[in-house]
View 1 (cartoon, rainbow over the protein chains, first blue to last red):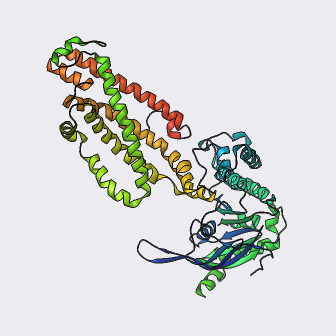
View 2 (cartoon, rainbow over the protein chains, first blue to last red):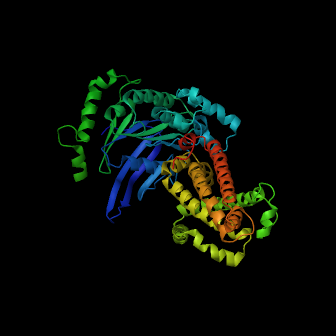
Length: 273
Length: 225
């Protein structure tokens, strides 16, 4: 496993587990004894097959679901519930249909009691950064799927969260829109807020997406963290970056973890103990 | 025999000296009061019970029974308890509207995707804000759709309740005219009732499209149900 880059841990998980009880009474360990330390400013992708617990882990970091075992902290403080410090872009569309695009982007600031005269320019700036100035007054039903994701991304960035959690945000989008949104996301991430870059936790099952975006890739399988890989390739990354020998090696490794390539899966070894 | 503004002939049948207009106003006023009361009570109960399980366990059996039993069968009780005044018919229609709005509001709150409430919370919304900024605006179009449906049924219910026992109203006029076989008069009264119902529905549709302009349902106009 690759060493995580040094720095102050922004997210710190110690033996975190999430145990559900299914309707039939059977116990399911969605996340099992997961320990990880994520320094501030790092862009981390979490990959793994469906049902591996990656979204559950993200929900625990967001505070929408509390761990049933273990300790989970942000910036040294335990995570006890949702907080505007940790913005979430959900897999489903979460843009409020009853608010215009600009009002959606403003909403977090409104909740925090920032007066309209101050929050409007902030919302306008972030809408401009995601390329949606022209549709600021549009209703969400008038926007495309890609535009709605842009609004959602602008909303969490405008709210000034220091940690951003994205749960397969671009999974339902076409290839071109997805690539455009990667650029938007990376441009926003490059912005310095409060003296540092924001910390990003990005859940995806798309290996190329992870390699394009991440400083570090966490691989999950059956609720376990089975690998922790550093991605050293320089930014900005292009199509050619993915052809570098190191990236090709990482891709093969990730595909093996996902069970898509031959070789004994680390997953099986890890789960078997 | 009847007249739009004044119909002294009706006094002969026990009605006070009045015309179709006054009777129509009496009926419309009752319907609107009952619709407003029933919508408020039904929506509130529906929303609260959609989120609080034990309250729902109490209200659901009552509401579902009230929704299954034809509400008109209770009319004689109201007449006995409250007499032939305004209260009896308003109460009857209010119960009808309450049951419809209870079901509409409860269903709307249940169908609301939890992602909106989760998203609001992660943006820093308090419980109060989640209710005022997410739950209520999200359910408004469906509730207003329910109000239109309830209004449509209310006219008939109010008229029938007046037929069964009242001192004023279009229903009373129809009852009196039926007694004297005045077919033209009955037609005039029914036509007027229908006309007012359609007019009120058009105004309601206009208001809904203004209030819920964000919703797709409101822009297709008319009733998608």
